[in-house]
Image (cartoon, rainbow, N blue to C red; front, top):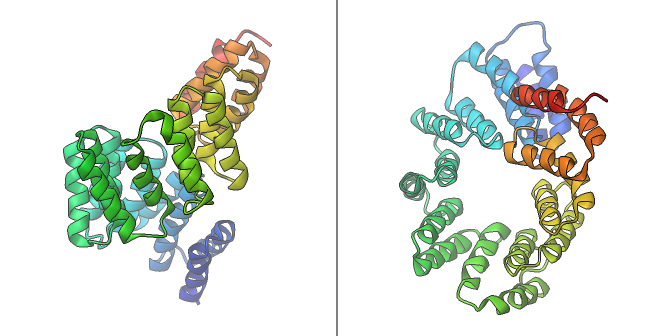
Length: 326
């Protein structure tokens, strides 16, 4: 019965029904028998679901319970890496992914994520090493080829970068992100004034509906010195793809750069409430509200943020103390 209940919960998780998966996993954990093997596995899966739902404080608590009950496994180490990655603690995430690999994870996820962490921290050699190991394990690992392309770009070798991105696209022809990265690299060979037109043509043809290609267009608009148009593109992507957190955040940044602070403020607020661990986002929102003189609005936001801030609670409280009395 326990195995059946767990299997049903994991089926919901695989189907992307995350809210239902949480309920089913918590039902497995609510049985009076204590924490057995199935319950320990359920804890790690619950932590993974909470990471995917951006409930990072809940994920950390559940993961601690799982490892206290059954020790660290390759699976729990990988999930902790995903948690730290979402929290933008890239050095800690890298350590967790290394541990997952050392404990015998068979796939390429931890190696690819380790490569991404290394890129984030500026460790180009580490990124190349992790991605190369992933390719040795699976030549079809498109994520690893993308990292190798990024490494080549950082080293100024556009030809090699294009070859790596093309390889990633061949490995995963339906991967919209890999296609967008390939196009973005190809744009570097065009004159700046031709890049917007090229992406717009692709969006009407082969790249139609590709949200990552819309992101490329927004970045090209921003690079051409038109943050207002970039914001319009990010808004189009956000409206087409409900729940696109990245598009919402980038729209907010573009609006701020365009001087449209009143439009940027509610977007920043919603992003901060969803990702209180993002230090740069948090600090940008604080500065923007001070620039607007919207201190009452800022106070209300910070008070609402306190219960969900997790490890950032102290920083939120510190900003509250800096505000004048209401």
